[in-house]
Image (tube, one colour):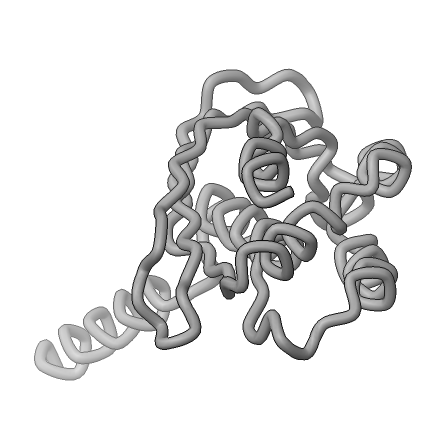
Length: 164
């Protein structure tokens, strides 16, 4: 009988350990998804910046609060990476993103983050790595979380000017 209890406890611990991801893990995934939608270009030769920008605006919308989306849209954030990719003949890949919580206030969490974005030559080699530090706020809406604010220092602006 003791062996059955031990097996039951071990299985219970395994099942509990395989539960839902922690809030930090959920927010990490959310942030990475937002950054991938925002920045990644898989084939610069096949993009129409205008059409792709519109498509990205729609893709990112469910992950942002209404206010954050309005700002993203009005500032035309989706177009900068596309123009950089086109002007410099590179694909763009988000490689790393690490979050560190800095504050929590009611339903608003603030994190600092670091991120690496690679500009890839047509052969896949790394042409340049951009390192960014930023701050992202997450707001609870309904049962889930959304990005309420994202600041990364306008990572692509310098590259866009360089390629112009």
